[in-house]
Length: 506
Image 1 (tube, rainbow, N blue to C red):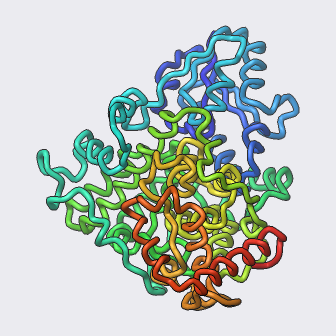
Image 2: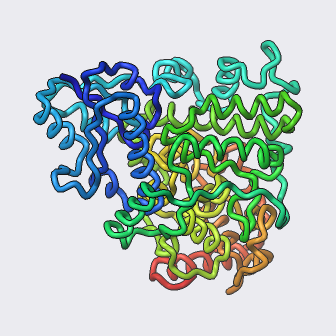
């Protein structure tokens, strides 16, 4: 007798563990407190995964599989994945567990430490295996995503014309940095009314996780593959064409703009990354979607997504503890919804609270930028991102935060820290117009905190970044300022950080 383990982010019928299943195997699925509570997950994320797991288990039973499923409120639930495997092994006399490798070192270790044998099969839902990524990285001085992405384009044939990229270039980023205007006719993502299964889960989550950051209702996400396919079809038909130009834009009354909102479904296994990319490429081939939009979207999936997973497993279990800049300030209450005078932070955090979602520029250039400039402990930042977003799993979240956002890995992911003054946010959003601070003010009580902290960050880390070709020129600008102005900036930044540490409204 064998057990087949299916985790909450492995809801794919072609999963390697399921392909290995025999008719008499027992499939084990479990909603457990140890996973739901490893960080204080957003209640919508917990509800999404529990509802999707229950529906996936029903699909497996309809196919003839025997599924041992534990709900969170099952009194016999041991409340951990290892505990549930041992319980089911004792119930059924099983002597072997077959699993698809989890996407987190913690769970990989937990399965390896079980007192019964566990075979962890590769997760081949990804395009690049560990061995393939390691071979690509071997001997390279810099592990730049762009070069990896080109190899993935060649491997998949997506947007390729023979051995050349469609349109004669690999990357159309220069076409994809336009600010957006409010548009009442802009398509919105589909909304799904909770069915009976989802409604039951919502009640459970509401009762069990009442204090977690984030609003549970209204809950409008799809929770099965059929719904996820509807979201994909809607995005391709209504939003993808303008995704490219406006993918970096931010509007305070439009949380989704032209974004796909497909990452929750891809990362949970309800959609495959390749089918999503193929749909985008087919829409371009049919003349329905401009090339820069199709390319920019595909790059996020077969480029960044695959690259981030490769980095996570290449760098090893200690990756989330890295902190080369020595930042140690505690995560301030504004990240948990405390009042703030910074409208950009209020908008990004408020949207996260309401939808368990914010797009990549809000994460990188607002909440991430502020954390880096303010010197916040990167491990606390990492755990916040892992907790609050519906699409966050450690294999993808950690390299994005520890590496790209916080530069805590010293440049493994990014060749420079992603820091900016308030001007970038002003250019790409409508946030600054409704802010108590003034983005045009460089010093004084109403100076945008991003302006003050930008220079303060560079001066603190001058020795590390002065010779960086992508950011080093900023120090020449600093040096040209008169001494009094430099002193005012540093003093105002220090005063702001003192207020932040004291828990004052900033």
